[in-house]
Length: 223
Image (cartoon, rainbow, N blue to C red; front, side, top):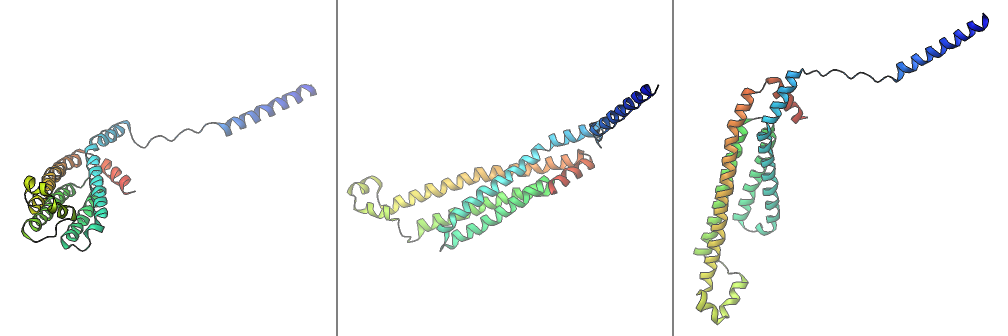
């Protein structure tokens, strides 16, 4: 009788220890998601539709970095030239607007898209002005010719092929600045058109997206 009682006590102790261990090592149940299945679907659909807007923000970032790097590398060559320094100051404003616009686009601000479009238009006319002024200086002022061209004056075959050195210099500057102006018209013009069309996309997105989704997305961007 006593022997059976002792065995029962030991078995009970083992069972108690086993139960306690199972309770302490059990995998915790994950907290349920605060969003319903419908809300999950709304969030996924909103993120999909926002891709074009996020892509525009990436374009603004690319424009800001590329223009900024070009402007930075041009500083040593612009010192002492007020037209070149004016161009660099204008480029600095353009870069600032691109980076500021990048953040605002990710917050779904339609007015920012139009601002970036006009920013590209301003850059286009800034480059037009610089190219036109440089072309004018080359054609209608007594600008010093590059040393490489001055050496061609003594070459007898040069005059029979190209005429005067000054004429060749004017041709080179026309092709150079004309090419830059044409490339600017295409590149900045397309950039401006791209930004302008993003404004309607942002307005439509904000109008059809639930307010709680917009708030969540903007909070994540701000963080």
